[in-house]
Each structure stands twice: as structure tokens, then as C-alpha cells.
Length: 80
Image (tube, rainbow, N blue to C red; front, side, top):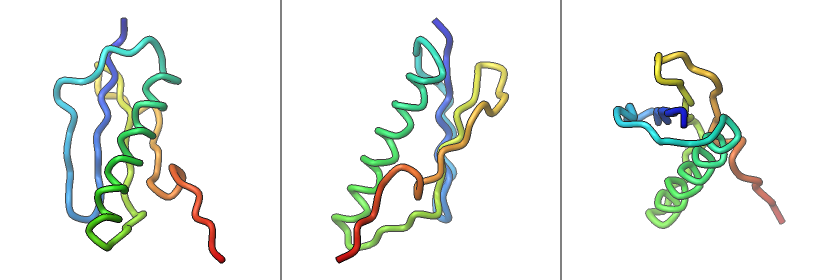
């Protein structure tokens, strides 16, 4: 099973994923990244701030970035 690294970056944090995740394919890595972003943003919202300027870079075991998912694309914001 391939290993995907989900590197989180925003204005305050650069958190490389050194260990990676054994996932079947890029679609599963994308789903894992979206889950991580939503969890991260949930904690931010509980603290009173929601900063959508971050991203997760999905990289393969060679370090090649296969896809970038921006925080703003991981949620839908509905205004009244």
C-alpha cells in the first residue's frame, strides 16, 4: 500500500508529516486530508477564530506533492 504524507501549512504552523499514512490511493489521501482540515478548523472555531488561509500538501513517499487542498476548499460557508 502506498504511503502518503499530509503536510499541514498555515500562517502559524508548518507541520510536516514525517511518518505518512498507508492509504490505498490518492482519493483516500484526499479524504484523509479533508478530514484533518475540518478537524483543525473545528478546533480553531471553538477558540473563536477561523483562518482559511492554510493548506495540506499531499505528497508521495519521494516527497513529490501530488495535490494541495486549501482550507477554504474543505468547507462550505453559508451566510444568512
